[in-house]
Image (cartoon, rainbow, N blue to C red):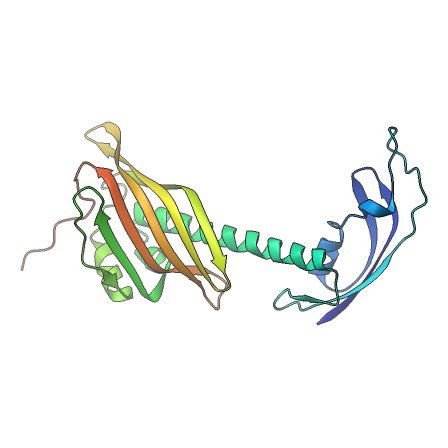
Amino acid sequence: MDRLQTTAPRTRLGRSTYTRRSSSEIGNQLRSLRGYGEDCRCGISGRISSKFRPRLETIVVDERTGSVTEASGDLAGLLARVQRLEDEQAIRSTFHRYCHAVDVGDEAGWVDTFMPDGKLETHDTQTGGSTRPLIGHEWLSRMVARHTRAPERWHQHQITNSLITVDGDTARSESYWFLLMENEGRREVECFGRYYDLLSRCPDGRWRFQERIIHVDSGSGASTLRPKPVG
């Protein structure tokens, strides 16, 4: 752990400038986000209209986990919010890798968005039908090997409006999705629906699907899978 010491010798309207003494990059970055609202009062001209006394604050940051001790509650809260934003962005990156990989035929990249025992399942919202769940990399690899891809067939999986809830090393998400497809020279929305996801944080820092449940709310019924080989 790294002990940080900061002072705030001056301030300007809308921004505080800090003197930093630390070998910890995370501590340096967070110091620039901290405000000192009750210690100064700004007039119409934007100049400081009362004396400002610098404050010395000592905190301890665990650089491995990002946890903070001996700090005021708002700084600990700030760290938690930054971590949540980083987690949400990493989860969205998993969503995007999934879409890009399946569209261009990156089979290994697509399978890698799942945990080793990850599950994929599809439900038809209108008929109530569902596919047999695919569990584990072996079954997922068999499925994606049959999936169409460019330039054989042009399509793009899109994901939007993701509602992500992070709880430690697990997360749940509900998202809209739709599939753009080229059919005989026509560009169409082939189908659309919702993804219900359960994800886990992995030792390499990436988030992967423990479970992805696909709900097809509306679609043409056309398949993006090649026929199974005969024999």
